[in-house]
Image (cartoon, rainbow over all chains, first blue to last red; front, side, top):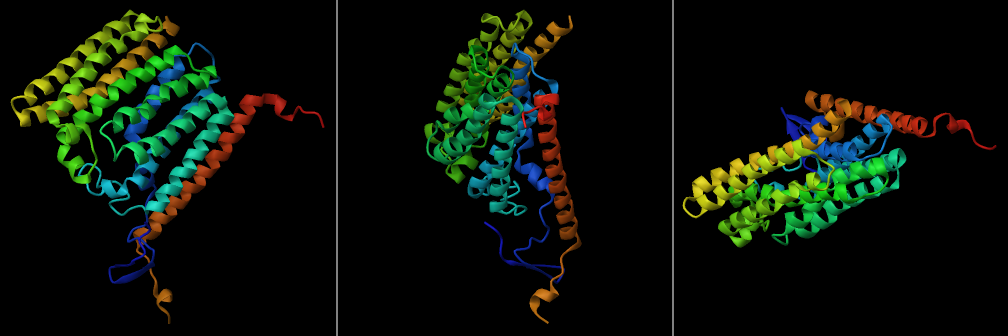
Length: 315
Length: 52
């Protein structure tokens, strides 16, 4: 919604439709959710590196840029659509639209332009498979997750997690022009990681989601049920993280690393559940620890895959 | 004198607008360069090699 009120600053009339301070380019960068973008770039890169094909390094870099811009565009469109609930939640109320730095339709325009540009560049650089997947990911995040699921069901981030899990598949497709079982295993790792990651956040931000009317699992099913489901997902995820090793596209170093970091993840998830039966406050602190660790966990898993492959090239 | 002739903008407004316009210009230039580079890498010298 464009702010059409007349702004006055220091007694000066700024004109209709003007903002007291015009949005700076930093506000637009913020619309792209740079922190989410960095994890997407990283998992996309791992998908590319693991693919047993060759790609011109420049085209590889362009494909990665397209993944980054596409992910940013999806984040921007999410902020456009969710501006009303973002304004209610403490975690999101300082985002550019709710704080009044960027007009809502400007964010929409920015997101659409970047979406189209990223898909087009991907298509020109590496071909149809990767660009179709990128377009599908952006559309899925906006139409299925943001518009369809987020405000309707506690399974929102379970199904919506597919969008965040696709970047390594896109990376793989950028190199190979097709998709096979290996990138789907990487997809499955991120897909199964997403619910415990977001539910850990929702546990200690429960009030925020409740106030905004977002039916996150702890809001709908109760906190202890969400804790049990987090533990269940952590237990299911652990063997899935070992699949790259079992299937032979990762080695022992990855297998040992995955087993170790997964054991810690399960133990932290177990602690959240155990404390939840006795002490809410301590359980919330444990959920905060689990959330922080979950980011490190996914990063280490993908870093181990990357490091092992790069070491294999060098040695 | 009408109201619109009295409009003055805060210096920060002008500064931000200038920086944003510059960012848009640079992004457009980068987009053009990117398309050019992709074309050269993908087609190489063949970019000029087509039947007339």
